[in-house]
Length: 276
Length: 277
Image (cartoon, rainbow over all chains, first blue to last red):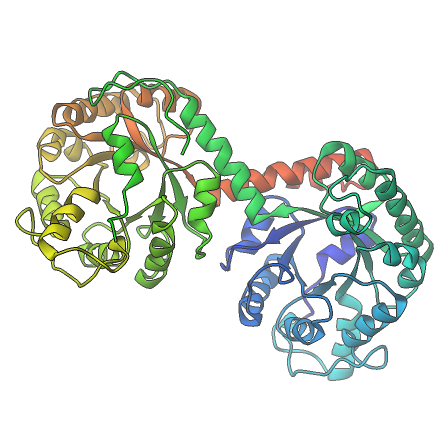
């Protein structure tokens, strides 16, 4: 079987924005179909802050592969052992948080790619070839090219080192973790603060220089999101099942609660119900 | 421990709206917290059309009990064996679809209530008492009063029999399944059709006469929801995790794609692609 294409990587290589659908609560094979139904390109399975087992991650990744939605997994900082098992079982890319130096970035690029570029171990027929890969040499080379490796920039040190990190071969995206970065900068949650804008400018310039993609995480309001997308962010996380559910559920509860009640027998109470 | 109150039943008794948060995809103990954050009163776990096991449904029921969100489960028509196991393991109410006759309603009421009201079997200390119930006679009486029994009216026959169904002791809510009912009436999906309005009127009158609550299912637009709530509908499932996720995520995707198009990072195909929901 041919390698499952990483549509997210290809889209970004063409200069288009690729949207991520965050998964925190769902454990259903329906997740990629829901992401596709709502116009997203990649699943962001968050095992830095979610409570997935490696097996649950693998089930979602494998379900995602035939749908065209790219399964990407964020692991905990340094949990490279979980990352390679996710890659062996269907993930088309890894998001590594809290990457502060080029040395850390090289360690990641090496762990996620087969020789000669790296030192990833061959785990047998991989899911992204439908478990029917061609000869190993060909498969390893193709997989090295297809996976997406994302390093998160979340500290002043990482911003300072952005050009060196972007220069590392095998790093595809520098994703700014804007929430944590603003905390580290002492301006927690101020997504439009000049220090954040400056960080986006620096990391954006580093990406441009080295042909890498700029990513944006944690920016959800129009003013700031339009600024950073305008500055070049193309790997964009739109939210997660948590935020989507609450957006939808609150809209529906407001809708039904605001409709006028009839005078019903019972105790004759009319008007709006008390909020639950 | 005191019995866990059924927030949905208590609101209905006050004539207030009880709003349900439907579950199809989620299998997480976070579901009741999401329902609370989304300002709902009960969970509507759908085992008629969802793929829950009894075990999965009861885990969510037990997690819900401590939150004040009433866990209510819809089983398949006739799956009373699943329903009683759900009640034994945390559900505060059951929705039985496709109830067409008073005889079927009596069978349901009988299965869900302990003697003398019915013939439900005692399964040992129940979670709705935190597994520390009082004496069995007191517990059985209190549980009989606390659970919510909902029958769905989804056929012309059921509408015709609404008065006899509403008269059955132990049935709390007559919930109109508007999708299936319109299909059975030969007007599928026409939620404002006169035949459906007539059905709501008939079932509303029957519910009111017998002191039961009217429920509305499958009505999501302003015009029709307004009409049927105005006619007395109070037990309302507002949507489910599926519709919430799709609505929320489409809104977010449109937002960011719009920004990207302005910034020149759009994709020619996006315009077509994002239309489909």
